[in-house]
Length: 290
Picture (cartoon, one colour):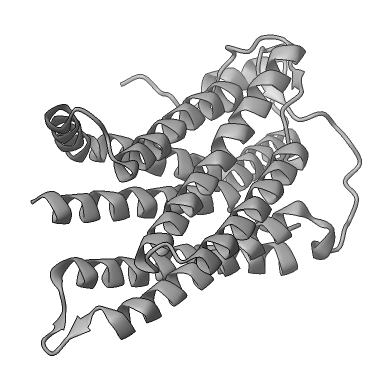
């Protein structure tokens, strides 16, 4: 059996004179790289698996679109989330794990594009929740104004996060993109875009699903309980709130107290929101049409 643990590289690394301290340092370096990149790798794997898993539901949507001769807004939101997610996975994989960019300028371009598409996923999911909330409130003008203001702030914070999130700006002699070496300033958590982005994301999501759940509870229950669609909307609200806000709280705790010792879970948070958003749209569309 051929070994694939990289042991054959050791003579080249140590010039045929292995040294115990250097070997241990190399092992520590490898473990450090693995530790700080694990959330990103897990996020990419989960997002790609979700993209593949949703193809049967996507085919059902396409058949309904062909029959109706036009897509509805829920289907457009689903396709937007799914294919922005796919582009994000491809771009992030190319810039993080391959030699495709090849130059400093391309590393910068790929990093910017990866960040833009990744943070756009979360914005699309939040737009989906806002759209559902507007429907549940029957398009009340005051609710629409509040949702519009919330979405505007969400987009502004996403732009800030994209602009300052780390980027791979240099290409190594081996052809891989890396972050430029720089002095890391110890900042308070309140100075970080990630803190405000995650905090608003959690609060806005929670406000929307809580208010729409209360609205359903008060107005959509009959003597025998919820109607089928209303029951599904209510259950989806609960599931989304638990999943999305739990991961947002974990990221907030990490940013506030452990950001120098624990890797960021930002991409993983966005991935889980994308998975919850797509499943929410799938289940509600299937309930409506089946």
